[in-house]
Length: 110
Image (cartoon, rainbow, N blue to C red; front, side):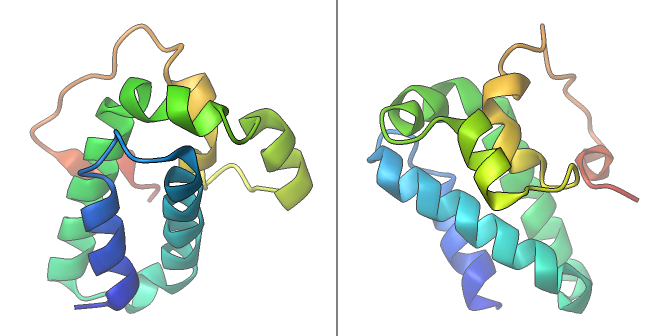
């Protein structure tokens, strides 16, 4: 398994850790974005599941993350592209409800 993916899967299981670790998780996800097309079908499914967990648990990650970084400022500093939705957790939590889908691929851009 891709080592970045392995780390990301572990990271999304621990919303109670330090905001610095959450920031590293978002950086790991951005690195995965670059190599996503090289992942196997199984790895892509695992990535989708981890992304779904992060998206649906964003409220749990955000308070600690915001102790260390302002995500809006960080997006501007990093020149984050819109496809990197994980840098928008502060916006995501404002959506009334993330629909639960049996087809989790809906979270992944086509």
